[in-house]
Amino acid sequence: RFALRPTDPASWIPHRIQTVAAPASWALHFGLGPPAYDWGGIKGPPRIFNVDANLQLLAEPALLEDISFADPDLPTAGIVRTPPVTFALTSGRMRANAKTYYDHFCAKGSDEEEAAELAEAVAGSFSGLAMWPRLVLDIAEEFVVESRGSAGEPRESSWQTLLPLVTERPIPVSAGDSVEVNLAVELREEVAKAPRYVLEGGYCAAGLAPDSD
Figure (cartoon, rainbow, N blue to C red):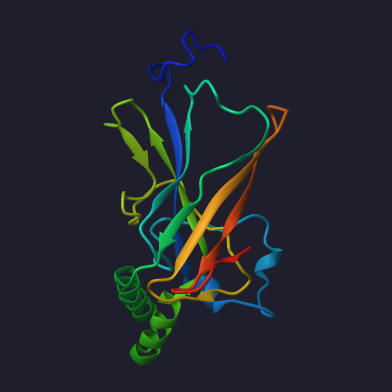
């Protein structure tokens, strides 16, 4: 509010903040469920360390939210919806995830046969939408801060990956399936009140109509 030229991107560092996302499988969600564990009882979506091998992406990451501080039309209050983004679940990702899960489970002491079976099952499941921040510091986008790699690969960061769960139990999925999502963001009149984010969208098995939620 005190910038001399608030609509000049050069006035802001960072000048854009973004949310990158991708559908993900999560071994912990796959392994724990009712009645032993109630995911609906946790406060807020799970936050997962970026280097945790229990979380793997099912599709190529995409930009879900993009905010430019220099935008003169930034909304001040009300509900804002981002454009829908469609993620295609790929066989390459799922095969690589199964290998990662297998190695991880074996390293934790699982029997090889048991680890292989479990790895395939977890790799073919959809737990939620993994989301992480991206800061664009300059107009030319030469200086960008990302908590994960450009392809969503794990890297050390103090910013964790957020994983809103789509259902109480993971959804079995296959390559060729798709997930379409958008954000509904409620901006409050009071500056001190944080925005409220709601995920909208649905899952679609290959060749079928979308199942919205």
